[in-house]
Length: 231
Image (cartoon, rainbow, N blue to C red; front, side, top):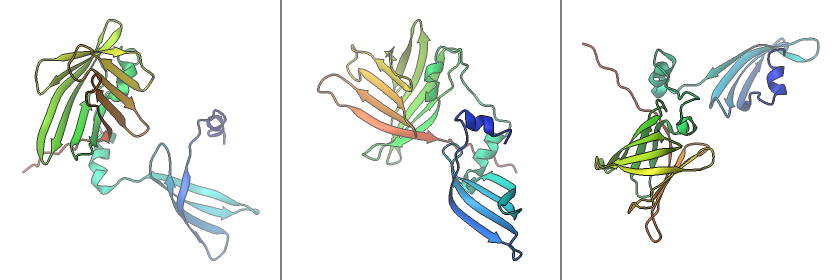
């Protein structure tokens, strides 16, 4: 209680909801053990187990174990993350720290079945470096080199589709969790928007009046790092 109460008092406590629970009671009727599956907003799927004893009327928890479940096919990724791999994070003082939520790998599928993905580095040295790719029917349809640079009083989005000459889009004031870049003089697009949603990213690319609008969503992705086989 001395450890947990201050967190609950601040309204920053943990939230666990049991979605399945199994309880077994010893034939004596005074000891029980249980296991349960938990749904949590921050940890994801989890599992708990423990032992209880009937003490002077109420049941009291003698031991409780909380475990995070890891699918077998993702164990190597978790092992790497928990190992010596470095974690790249934006410094709070970096001029692009406000758009650091863009960092990471993102993947989504457009209505026509086209797979789209973007990869962004952490914000460091006043820049984020990114790349984008679209794949359909096993073939790369499109790719581009991307970067966001801190220049004077605003960020600038630089796109090089298919490795062509760069086109710059100036950042415009936007709400937290959104990043909007515009270049009214460009033929198409003229506006590029990113929005951080509860479970991913929303991207909207638009032009002038009468021009097409392309919009899609992407979710966080992990890139498998295959290990070299030794002889």
